[in-house]
Length: 230
Image (cartoon, rainbow, N blue to C red; front, side):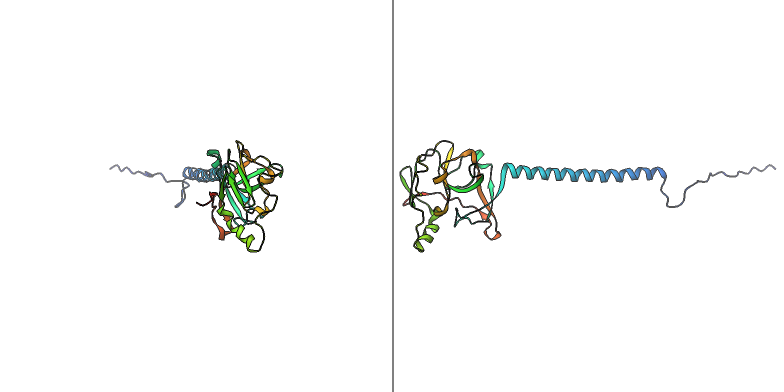
């Protein structure tokens, strides 16, 4: 009786131990991890680039910080206060009376902060603390406190000879493309009474926010002169 036997019907696996990842799976996992890290780095670079671009656009085209230096706008603004200046507003429209603006004075090589008193076409006359615009007497609520402070200690709220027009600025009608700007502290302010009309091209923008010191944080009040008796 013939008997047939079979041996080695199953071929053993060589070089494989329990828990060991196949070589081809290892090779695929490593590049995937590197790709993920690369993508994360690229995303971070993109985010930082966009943030930097936004800061650049905001800083140079929309808003700019400004530090008050000097007493010319007391008591409404004090030395050391930090403001945000809106640089885009006057690309849309021209300044209006009563708005607090920052403008560059090339002759001084520095920026001034003052209040708009006259706009193109206005005829302005200042006699002491009496302001006349187009022949009508106006009151200035934003300097009332400064006037009261000066009078309380027996001092004038203005310096004699600082009227407008004067020997320095003889013309009193605001030309096209310019504004007339005075400091709130009329006794101690170098403004249009000395430097003349301000070209709109030199206006940087409107002071809109006080952000330092924290205790004075808030929007800037733009108070216009009003006809006397109103």
